Length: 338
Image (cartoon, rainbow, N blue to C red; front, side):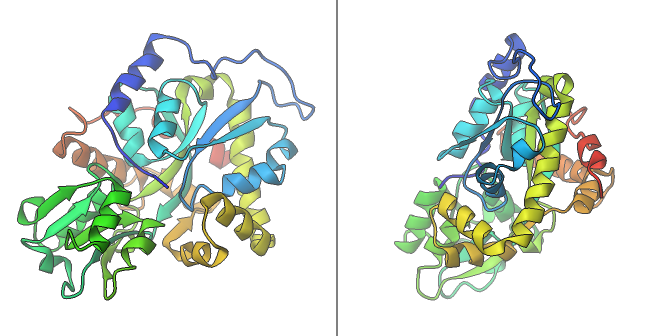
């Protein structure tokens, strides 16, 4: 399962949006029985615990209860979902703030309307026996996927320990390959996300020496729409945001069934899925409102966006910091009854 890859190829994809209309974003107007205007809305998602509730919404018919026709498209490759949104083959996608900023810097017009979750432990720096802290990584070989949120986590952890990437032997590898290389003893530590954390921890004596729990708010995940779609079909966007919170309520009331649905979608056992639960904090409506508020703390999206933009520039994933104008739209969460 692949998740969270910031990539330059989004730049070219973003330009495609600026040059023409999108295939999915300009439906002929229709009216559903519940009164929500517009045609079918296509939403992408991929392998991450914070996005699997969408599978529950789909299987339990919760979109229809809010009068909106939604097609959920699951992507084995997260990168493919990013490109599908950027080129207009999706109306919306579940993606990280890192990748949204990367896409926007390439010219794509995208709007974040919902915070799905924050990573609170499911992104980890895992080290072999004998390495007990981030400081112990000095001079060691450390693998992570270049530009991913786990690369970002590694840099945050190094900075906290008074080190930089130049103090380690950074080895860029795809996340699955990085986990495999770690288990095979080819690198001393690895930055990975669940479920590859389980793979890496399969090395006897290995342990996490830093996790996303240590950096609150640094890795947020969102529902991101094409900006023109938001302007043209605000009622559909509103219905989908409401459905998300209805889904969370349904999951809370039907925990066993919901967990089975999400574990199946993730291709893992129920027990494995439950082990990831604490490492992904699904946001309530109030947590959404707090995150969307302007501020200068790690809890505020605009603060995190500024920090992540600096990371993208420093790692040469983008040429300049993207504008945050129009990126965050809290009105849909605000309109959902508390």
